Image 1 (cartoon, rainbow, N blue to C red):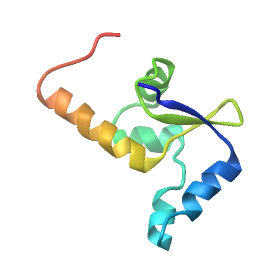
Image 2 (cartoon, rainbow, N blue to C red):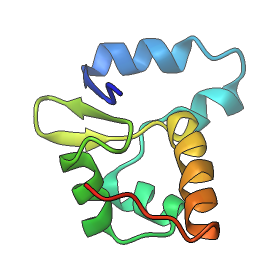
Image 3 (cartoon, rainbow, N blue to C red):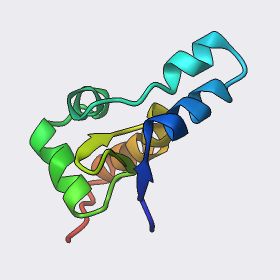
Length: 92
């Protein structure tokens, strides 16, 4: 699964501007690692680990900065919660 995408500010703005309403555009603002960790209910270190293992959909902005789109994290969170609920964990 290819979860890494190089992103630039113009590409992110294009994605945000393509939303049909103002509320949808706000939802597509890229999240920081801290915001993504809060949304997923895990620590920032866990998010960094998932990024390193390419297990979570993320964007690299300007090479080093990591950002996430909430719309891409929602399916990941649902899958993550289902695996935790079933007592399953994935080994790297």
